[in-house]
Image (cartoon, rainbow, N blue to C red; front, side):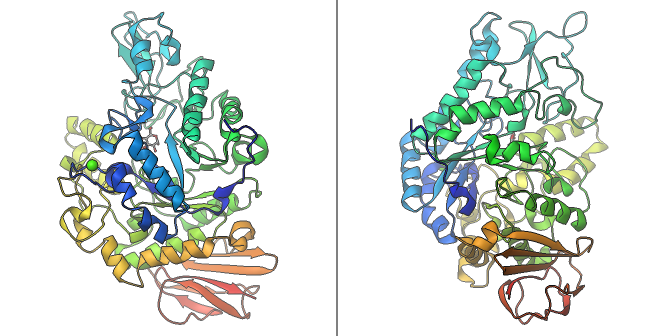
Length: 559
Ligand code: GLC
Ligand code: CA
């Protein structure tokens, strides 16, 4: 163990690419993406200007939730390869100047993890307290201990015959929650982190980390038709203490980045969660901007509100340098950003507009696989195509109430996580070049037009746009350190902001809608000599008083 490592905060200048291994690249024709497949694409990532990969779970897992249910934290899933393959992968990354951030899923394990098998076997097993067991209510003790719901539908408690008690699972019943109030569990987690750090891993993305500490009285949650109980475990009573402890016992001893998936962390409590002085997480994925449109946990898609969107980003940008931001609009839990934020007839413009507006902010940008080529949702996702356990469980409920079926189908067609999990579209060849076998889930039929080969053949493509922005950001102090100011925050169509560092200024102007927008440049920004850095349309842009075309976005430098 390398004690007293100084954190270099390398992540402040990183571009991170998220790989969902199941769907990235299949090397052996079994239809499932794997580690040798990733190895074959490392040059691709380097060319794109990526400097770090966040790899969704690749550990042993029975795949109730595609690897987010881990049965052995120290080994690789058979379908993905071996530890030797993994070692070749990380070596290959490091040789190319790419770091590796692994997924740390420790709010829960798989029910097939040895700890849980032991835990459920008897009340006095030494592993009993690794999980959360409670007696049921009612005369026969068969009613769940409280009204908390699983984020994946239904009660959060599962009755277990062997010992006649319930265990808690905030996700699927095959994902029992660990009991973080047990110091042995916390030590196990530190040991797991250190095991991977000693193998060269550069950081972790901590899955649902804000759920780890539960109110031990297990009170009923406020009534909520969707999810119940949040107020008793989202940033629960000992959350900060446990995270600080883990930071001290593991994370701070290596030169790492620790990013938490952080439901419940908003700009209001962000300082306590991520400020460097707290020695907890380095940064978080907030849900604030994503849930402006929808999330997989709420059922009704919302209308996009640009004023709110700007306010959320602007507030996060106003945090001190010591509170670092994660800049993301896609991951494996949301449908694609196209068409969430724009109409598909303008696919290229929308993708580039999003790339400009997100990448000129302070923070570490994330690209989710396929985002760099503008991959989209399925046009019509059919129930027989659902692979995500959430889609399947929601649709199973609908099947019991026939009139609900078309509504649920409609909602899932907009919101299912399956959209983002479809295989990566490498080429116009069979199965989009993802596999030579039968892919584990359907390829989006639009792969004949949207694929890496096409993008690389077109100098004006989304891919090259991302590549240029990634290179532009590298070492750029205005982006990394500059102040942020939002102009015209109440403008409903246009986002205009400025970054300023030692008098060097960048200005971003973007029309977020499919209709032309009149825009008058704020006085402070007009009448200066300027140089266009990025623009998603051909041709000149009149800077003083202009009509922006649908989704038109420009970033320029002014003096
Ligand atoms: C996180 C993951 C998601 C998973 C859930 C349970 O939200 O991103 O994919 O289903 O945690 O582990
Ligand atoms: Ca494979």
